[in-house]
Length: 143
Ligand SMILES: [Zn+2]
Image (tube, rainbow, N blue to C red; front, side, top):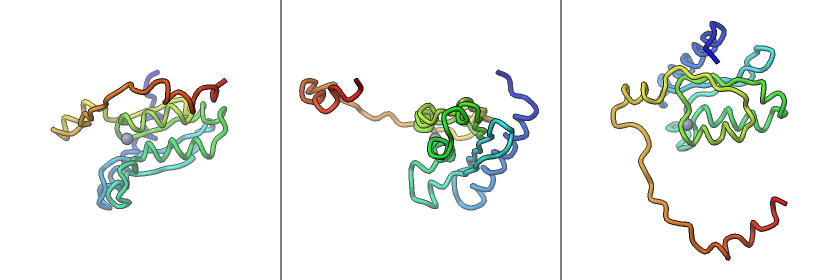
């Protein structure tokens, strides 16, 4: 789907929220949710520094808000507008939230051009292990 003039209007609000975050001492990112009728349902900006919370990305806040406050049908027809493409953490939350669409301004590669050395460090993950023991609490839960 393409980005429409209405989308651009909402993206400009996300960018304004990002500017607000920067002005208040946080990283410059902002997001909002627009419901099926075109009304703004919720807004957030990055508060990682001010909340001392590594998960305080606006996209994650909006995904959690959607999951808590919208029924599935409404969430599927709701769009998240965000100043930058959601990171991996936020993408996972968005996928679980039921939101139907995300529209972003800066792509991740464009952001990295503005923030050389940014991005996500890799973390060593070792496994799988102990399959017979680890499966016990899960076995039967989903059936
Ligand atoms: Zn994020």
